[in-house]
Length: 453
Ligand code: ADP
Image (tube, rainbow, N blue to C red):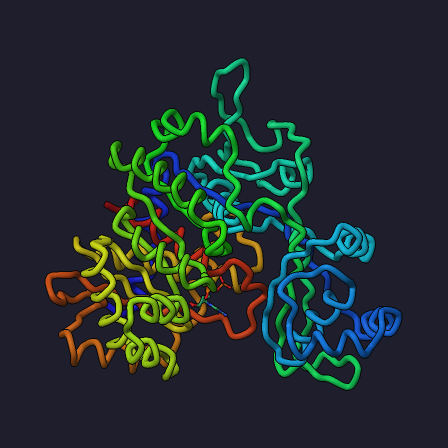
């Protein structure tokens, strides 16, 4: 069968069966993304008011956190000059107040758990229970309609309500996202590519704050779910990770007693001690999702420097190096499923197999392309609108390498007692939006696989 035929049949299968998936637990990070598209004159005026010299200093060397306007503008300029993303915690209340008055153009759901809740619950109609560290009125409003629930304790009794009905009056966790296009000019600098600088006014997500409903009633919550997706551990540091990780481990134990498969969405974790701790606990998960930079960073803490370098050396990423890295990770940790995604193709290594693993990847690729093409995917029917997006031509070489090395056919092969699944992805040349596209890929593939199995 051609890839196009495989794509359509995978979509039909998943769409027909996704209604069977039971409740999915999504924890732990949700926040409010306040997006501002930077304007050169406005930004330059504000930098002059603050003091050009001081701001320039921080645009050479990023401060550790933001405690002044010089830090804020220095951070923005650091990103613009390099065309690179950066994210800093905003500690000072007066800077937070300044950012609020400066305003935003758009408010969006942020945080992997929040984004996945809107996709799985709001678009696919799969019931989800989500951990939102703070439920403010604004945060509640960013959840789509659909079977999306948060636990609520009333009179000692646990119930589940839509986040809007939770009627929370808690704090806003706002991530201010300052976006600039390629060629954006300020103070004689020019952005080599489009990107963003993030200042997070969020006292909850970075420390992995876990709500009392989840601390005190997790046994009951665990009884209500069939699958779990965990994310949001990436901002922990060697100073604060121990307590948070202990609570996560307790949750995993409860879920494992009930045989609930749990996926870890592995975002880039800068702190090496925390990254190592996450690798050490991978055996408690059924599945993990990562991109090439994240897989390379995992190889680094496993002492596999050469392999790590290989993963970042070629474009598209060498699939043989990816497979070797996934085998090493599976063998070291015992994790049953590893889903790797990169620009152009996905690979999954599983200790169980069948075409359904590959078909779930195809569904995920279609969902990602639909998101890139349409910006907002409103229903599962929208996903099929990406069928006309062409498969990435560069993936042909990748497929050829996998055929030569492992005898792969139609995207499946057996490698060292593991099943390897491959799909060439559909790539939208002028995407409307790629925010949260990695979360779309991983959650669609994981949930899609359980719909098919
Ligand atoms: P993010 O953290 O921004 O979600 P990830 O690296 O986790 O980033 O995910 C990005 C993935 O999205 C890439 O690996 C690629 O597979 C996919 N992707 C990126 N751009 C496009 C596009 N224009 N069309 C389709 N898929 C895309």
